[in-house]
Amino acid sequence: MYQLYKEMLTNYLRNKSEHTLYSAQQFSKEMMVKDLSPEEMVSLHISVFKEIVEDLPEEVIDSFDLLLEVMIGYGLAHREHLSLRDRQRQLESELNVAARMQQSLLPSKELKVDEVDFGVTSVPAGKMSGDYYHYIVDEQGHIGVAVADVIGKGIPAAMCMSMIKYAMDSIPEQRLQPAALLENLNRVVERNIDSDMFITMVYGSYDPKSHRFYFASAGHEPGFFYEAATNTFHDLKTKGIVLGVSPKVQYHESSLKLEPGDFVVLLSDGVTETRVNGEFIERKDVSQLIGKYKHLPAQLMAEQVFRELERMQDFQLKDDFTLLILRRNV
Amino acid sequence: MQVQTHVDINSEWGIVAARQAGRKLAREIGFGSVDQARITTAISELARNIYLYANKGQIYIEEVSNANKRGVKITAIDQGPGIKDVRKVMEDGFTTSGGLGAGLPGVRRLMDDFTIDSEVNNGTTISAIKWLR
Image 1 (cartoon, each protein chain N blue to C red):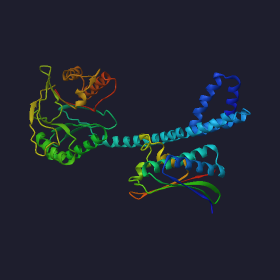
Image 2: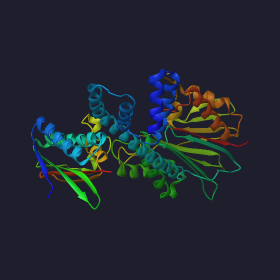
Image 3: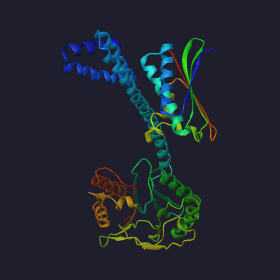
């Protein structure tokens, strides 16, 4: 190292070539890999310089004291940077583990029932998601579906989300009664989360014999109902305040009948609040987009809509995105 | 018995005097110029902490040795407010972000051994050793 630097400096003092400067730049990379601190580099320069230039004026030698003193501070900042970088890597890997755990809270088995065509896509804006979705088929073949959105993003939202999952697991008998289920969940949420956190949720259940879809919403972004006969989209109009605000809340339950080819879409506000060039897209744009892909199976439909909206916002999601589609088969 | 220098810290002058004493001893023991600068920077930081947070205190500088090495030991003592959360001040980025300089993590990096004892309302004692390689 000493020898190499000495050669470079000797060369440079002799010919002042760009070539030597380039070698010096390469040298600095190597020294950083070897963890040579800035003050050690300055010190190396001083010793080499003293050796190759005889009779340096005393002022030049003394001036290096000052430089060395200043470089100590830079050296410390450099080391701190390295240690913070390590810590960031560690946090990153913990976050990856947490994200995998969160993924495991979502249903893992595909929903395969003859009567319906089902698809869902959920993509977090960051590593962890504040969106949650759920689907289940009971022994009688009834299907329960849900989309929930924790107001907020990142880790706090994600932690909150896991509570919804456990709460739902503990009240299985209400899977067919969306309003009662939300009322129960609301009590759990109200008791367990900070008053500055809210969860919106929509729950639906589908009876494949009567083809009726029952649903209730707690302040959630309204979904869509697509009517095949008229080729039109309707809003799934619902009323009900968000979960966690007040302990005693009653939710309104609605229902509608699905004809063959009809489908319902549940989504999170990450879908409707997609921003293109700084402006929110309209719900009508979303329904048009869904309509564009309605010839596809539900799963592909959801994926295509996501892909297109992702592209529209230059692949930078501002909010977690969840889109769930349930269609009555012909 | 080795000599111990002690400097009262109650002004910026005290900080400079402590640096001077530290540099002199480091040079005598045989530390190179980079390590001399590191030792004096550590002294500065410790003395400044005393001056800024405890108003007054002492810096002790002494030569230490064990089986086969020699070193410089700096001890900073004050009867100031103490540190409530030592783990926090030893965290990178905690003091530096406020522009307060290298802080205690910096001192720990500059030196080889580092110990800190602090009790709220009862002051702080920090000692740090740099060994000659």
